[in-house]
Length: 400
Image 1 (cartoon, helix red, strand yellow):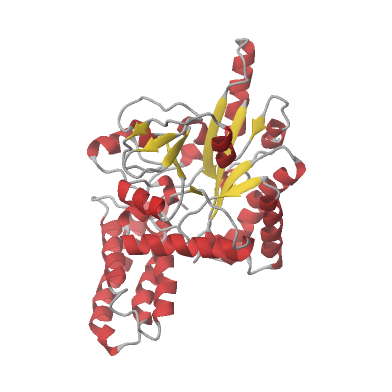
Image 2: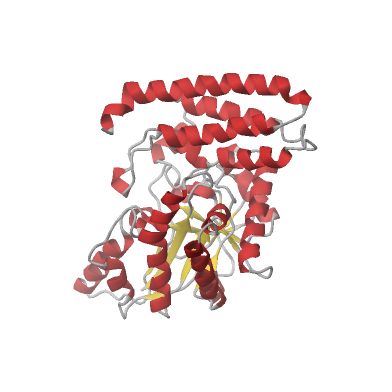
């Protein structure tokens, strides 16, 4: 059997470093050592640019980057492109999408060399729409990985696993993750599949499984005290490769053209039917999210007007951190216990993004920015009040 394992490494640029340290200790080092100790193992990783920059804050983080670079040179892993600060791309303007993608390329090449090749692309949250896809294609990427919901929409049909398709609108090659396998702990479920096939005396030879998860699943979210991951990669029947190497070795030539659905890796069939594929980040019934986006768009609107401002660097520095998808995700309140996650409600995390959005506007030094500052402060105070009113009235007793 062939396992195509895609892992997404990300921590918000504005998080406290101890969160990154925990992820390093419980997940990142484990995955890196796994590859070092199993020479035939291959994976595709997305390591977001903002995380790489934060890792350089400690000697340990720098050591991780160095060893990651060695695996990259050996062809044991491949890296993909993405947005440097994990912005929710379908809800951002073209200019911001391009800037974040280009910044991500710049960061990765700073650490891994100017000749680094990035044929594949990971859209944060796998949040696809055709506008984003066309930008990705125009910037030189060849393939994207998406959740199967982008293929099936509201139907129950599923793609052929391990098969590339062609996005009819953008011209990008597309490969889909198996949501069922990716929504559990993959080593456990894949082991069950092997046992079932063995019982049925079915061949494992042509079986292809593609999982895509956050890297933090392996240790931080699912502790795996019996080392099922390490046991699984030792199976003689298991082979693995990177997604790009899989494409190069496949015999696919005339790819089937398909029209993809706007979606994310958390979008449900019902949300597709209702035309609300991104409601986890912008729900029309969620006043906090709507007002956060109002402030975000207001801050973005100032970009070109104040491009020559002496503090434009700091405007951008705060803006990109405030635009991270986490700012809006943590305001959704959705329960993620089924996929080893928390309730998506954290006033501190929402507020962290909110603070960066308002500081982006506050950073501008031009006298012409006064009226914008006053308007932004109104948005800011309104949202801050909403966050804590919501917390004390609806969520407080759930977490104590």
